[in-house]
Every structure is written in structure tokens, then in C-alpha cells.
Image (cartoon, rainbow, N blue to C red; front, top):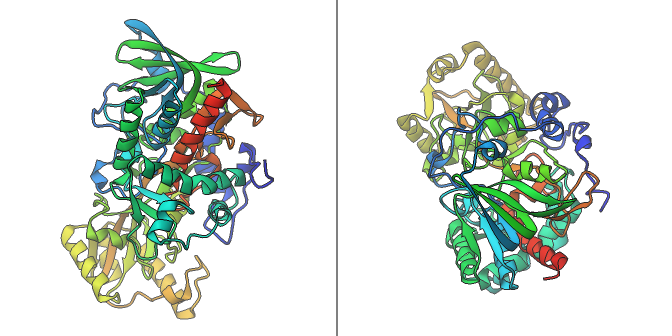
Length: 548
């Protein structure tokens, strides 16, 4: 373990503020995010009651950040019903019990789980995959298919060779975590990412460069989206004899002493005892419901989410049963949306969520962020620190013609408010008039001075708001993945409190990203890459350990 990588859960509580990058103050940590880690380390969910209904359209959570969802309304708002925890599910009486045997049982059918299933089944192992919902793939199947890597044959064949070295990619990941990552895991993903893409291509997947201004040669995109990747993996797995059990939820890791030896699962009123030589957890994150965010990242409770409603921390609780160390940092991938009744991301007005010359304010009228931040993921921290759930970008008519045209379309669609004065704008947008007027007054004074001493906005983006009409672009925070769950080794082994492997237990994808990401997502495509890499390595390690 490198010195950079040896991060312990207690160190997060003492994390200092960073002036260079947006970070959490200790106060915000204690009141918002840090409480989640403390709860999971010392508490249990056993007292929670079962959920009383289930949406058949739910998809399982997996190891892919669902960045670039095409339909914001396809996301889940958090349920107000009783929490549907694995403990509650396990307490329901079973009408019958059945037993199964496998070499490897995989929990979750997204990119990480299916990569493990394919890798193991190609080597001749008997594999069972458990998927708790009616459809496969979870977040992996509803993301756009971004894949961030370097050194693949596919990139070379297409002429996209300006991708740097694996060490540079690893350092990029580490830097994006504000130094709160495990450099060994950063290197693992960076060094095997290109190989993972070529493996997917071998299975019939295809990629091209991400068609976006400013995209680097590392940013690739599946030509069939995330769903195409998962569908190809499932087809290969089924060809190799993998058994895929749908609507089957893992509720307990079976232990033989310190070693994982299988899984108990529920399919309706039937309990399955699945004995296995190894268990691989790939069942996603915890941001699909408000009750699970309350437990693991309370600062984002009430936010909109694109993630699967099934992202409720099942893997965290399953691993805790086996004595795993949990490294909850409270981080989430955040893509804010236009409109308080959010528009889909593929709507042309979605580009209004990043207006560098405007003023980002909360629904209390106070400024909350450095508007020069170029990554939407960076806004997670100021949103959480504000404690609010609705935001606005205040701007005037001094916008480029194309942008002003979009703003006016936003007025027609009801996602942008407009008025001839700031006071009238506040009334139209439902904002308190005096705080907003003082915020704009202060901002204009900073513009005149040529230096933003409040939020350190770039001088070239400092543009006073003086020309009527004025506009308030409605902004809604949204999550699409969670960061920080289980610590894993470079063999994808789940680690205990002493950072020793729990024998027979492996994890990948979102469940294993605790030491790759911190509070914000590093870059689009990192999750699909990590899911593929860690899924394959988990299978390889499990088979090696079992002597298969």
C-alpha cells in the first residue's frame, strides 16, 4: 500500500479545507456528510421496516455512473414509504427454501457484475448472477456509454493516440480526488482500462471518440450506449452457461468462519441458499432513495436522482455482515438540471446549467458557488454546503446571441423567470427580494474591482449584471452515482478493518470506488472503465483463490 493510498475512515473527519479546490469545511462535514460514515461504522439498519410497494420498472444499481441520462423524468424521486432494506427483506417469512451450488455467485447485473460473470464463465466456472429487479443492467444500461481510458488498440486504430500514459491517467484520478484516493487503485484502473476496452470490443462492442467539444483522446463512447455493452456481456454469459436469476435479492452473505461461502437470497416468497466458492458484490450505490441517502449521504436528501431506485446500499450492508471496512465519504456524482421540474438532459436548454458570467444563488437569494468551475461535478460540494435543494443562475441580457436565444426559449418553457428589475425578478422566481438585491449589488462591486474575493471566479468571467431584462435560470441538483463504500485491494478483494482481505469476498464497480473518487466524479467514463476492470479482476482473483 502506498502512503498516498493508505486512507482510513477516521482521517476523513479531520480533513482540512482546501483553498485550491472546492472542498468541505469541517462544519459542513459534521452537519451534512460525515454523519453518514459515522452511522455506518457503528450502526445497523435492522430496525428499518420493509417497503410496501415495488415499481416494476426499477433497475438494479451497478458499477456505472449514469452520467448523461437522456430522460430526467426517468430518474427516481426518493420514496416516502418504509425503507426497503435487506434486513427487512430477510425478515419476511419464506414459504419454501431451495439450494443451489456455484463456483462464483455475483450480486448485480451491471457492467462490473457481468464482466465478472463473463470472465469466470469463459474460464469454465459455474456462475450464478442475482439481479433484484425485472430488468438487467441497472445504471450501466441507462448511461450513455462513456469510457475513459488510454492505450487501447481501438483508440490506436482510430488514430486517437494523444491519451498520455497510464501513470498520467492515474495521477489525474488522484488529483481529482483532492488527494483522497488510493494511488494503487488509481493505477489499477488506469493500467487496465485500455485492455478492458479491447476485451469489450472482442465481445462485439464498439467505441468511437466522444463527440463533444474539448473531449480528449481518452474519452471514448460506446456506439450502442451503456445498454449495448451490458447486452453483449449478458449474451456472452448466457452462451457460457451463466444462470441469471431475475427478481432475486441477496439478503445475506453466508460465512464459513471468516470466509464468504455463498449468499442467501429471496425471490418472492422463496429463499435460496446459494453455496459458492466465492462471492462478488456488484450491486451499486446508495443514492436511489431518500431513506438510503439519509443513511449514507444526508446532505443530498431531497435531491432529484437519475440513479436506479434500487441503489439503496445493499452491497454495503451485505459486506458489513462479512466484517468489511466501509469507507463512506458522502460523495455523489452530481449533474444539475435546468428547471425545478427538470428537463431531460438531451433538451437543448440543458446547456443553460453552466453560465459562467451569471451568479449562482440558492433559493434564499445568496450566492453559493464559483461560476467559473468548468465541470458540473464540482458543484456537488457547494450545493451540499448550502443545505438547499433549489438554485438559480441570475444573469442579464449581456449574453451571446445564441445563449440569449436559449434563455428566452427557457422563459417560454417555464424554466427561466424574467423581469425588468432584480426586485421584480425575485418576485417572479419566488426568491426573497432583499437578499437577492444585496447579492447582485455585492457581485457587481466585485466585477468593478476586477477580483472575486468571495468565490475566486476567473476575472474574465466577471461581468456585472446591469442590463435589463434580467433572468433567473431554475436549477435542480441531481445525483447519478455514489462514491465511497467498500475498500478493495488491487485483486478486487473486499478488505476488513485491518485492510486484510475477507476470504472469498470480492467487489467491483460503484461498490469498490471508495478509494478512486472522493466527493465528486472525476470524469465521465471513469465508472464504466472501473466497473469493467474490477469485474474482470474479481473473477480472475476468485478463480485463482479457489484453484479453478
